[in-house]
Length: 158
Image 1: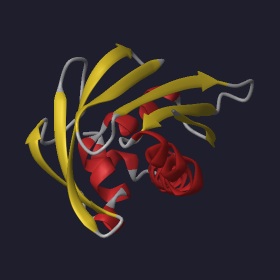
Image 2: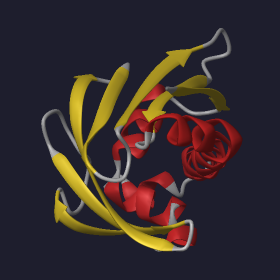
Image 3: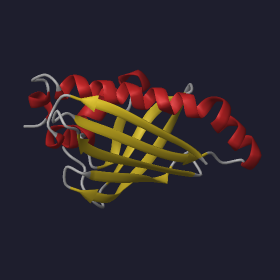
Image 4: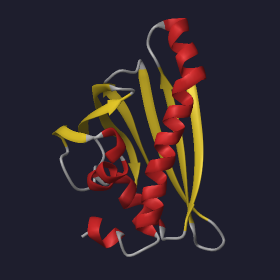
């Protein structure tokens, strides 16, 4: 199983960062490079505990569907989503929100995933997919940071 841990410092209050991280609209903006569209489940707004969303996106040159469900949530502190159908054998993304001494928010992503196909899948995870998924998260977090640190968040969180 591949594990990615990514820390992102954001100069904004936790509540804004937490809500932007759960926003369907912000995810679409952050994932324009993969042409992500919602095709089922939660279509807009902030995803909450036990809700699902199905995305259709082009990854690695192939359109894929990916359905995830929010399996844990504590307001402004934590939420986790897990794949219930898609290309991975397993996929779990935990999002933690901490405040440092200067009242900045530290967004901590812990992403665990496993590709199918046994040893070949492990090889793909290690050689290529871990880097690809890390870059995807960095783009997403850069977008969250950009919106949270400016008044752009008001366009998303009405």
